[in-house]
Length: 149
Image (cartoon, rainbow, N blue to C red; front, side, top):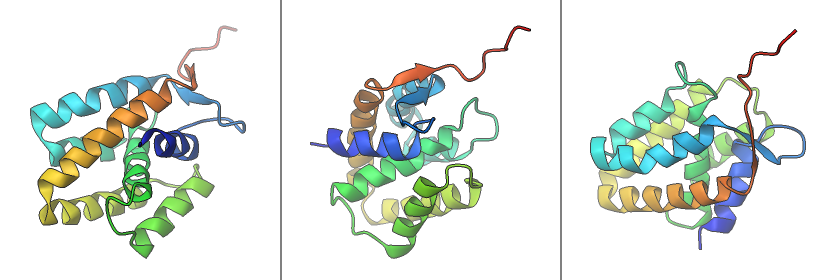
């Protein structure tokens, strides 16, 4: 059920290039470890880790808006105008500074988690599985290879 939403979210937030056919190689590992991290560390610590992109190869914080987009498209949670606007901004301008937007998403997730933590955990785990399957349909590109001269 979530796979069509995950394919669109991956294309909107994670793909690189004008044709939206490739994803950075690192994202396969990032999304694969998301579920294990939620189980081992908990949902909020995992989301905090994925919201911080400073030390990551590739911008792992791009997984957060992709997961939120899947939740909202699945009608799991009511769409709030500011969250939807932030998603739209990010979709249209991938070069924009992500930190304020991702922190806004993290704040929304914290508030949502207070309301019904088990529902959010289950929905995000389901969304991460759908995103993991969706990312398999894209070509992997290794952006960090050093070019030989």
